[in-house]
Length: 288
Image 1 (cartoon, helix red, strand yellow):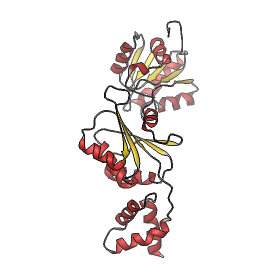
Image 2: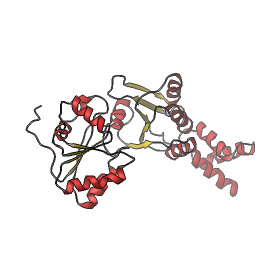
Image 3: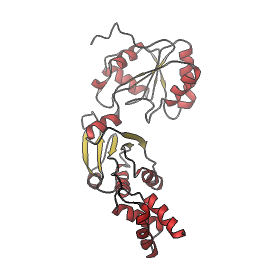
Image 4: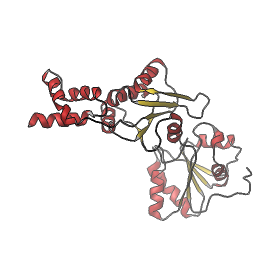
């Protein structure tokens, strides 16, 4: 498609554009033109956007500005000032859509508050690509981004999601993928269907799907590398009332288990019932 005579950027506007998550050929028509037209490009990694431009056959004439999680707050005003001066401002991140677990949100919020127009050029998205590729129900889903890094906080975050009736999407570091899958198997149940999407659209793309127990085995047997998206199927509807299972929790607690551990054990044996609800029900029954 001929791009030489097309224009997409407007002076005085901040545009956010999705970039390829792996394969440069996934770049949108508007991204290619925007890279050529921009006066200022705010990029998570300026070297990476220059490399992308080269891959797309675009000669950059714009000034580039590093704009990442460590300086986003301080440099947002520079983007607003450039737009106020009538410059064409383009904001991109290393891969995918800006502001989705990446820099960009502060710029959009500040621009709206300042009365500066914002445009978004859609394109590649790792969470949506993984969702469609997984074969897990896509009609209702929730994107949770990255889970907490520490084991305790990660476990608590998963417990809150144990009854979620929507498909869940997560980003994860390859270094923590095994630990996260193990925690998911413990909290969600080993039989819950899930999918690990690795290196999407890249040469070594890998899609591994199955019950969480099998994904845990996969992570233990392989060195997990690259960009990771985890997709988890919705929780099955619970047919059991936590109040009816409270006695089982208390029995285990009376045998010496901590109440919280007892609740987790009963939750694992009764899919669809959360450990948190069982703990609360057992505590209420114990105090009656």
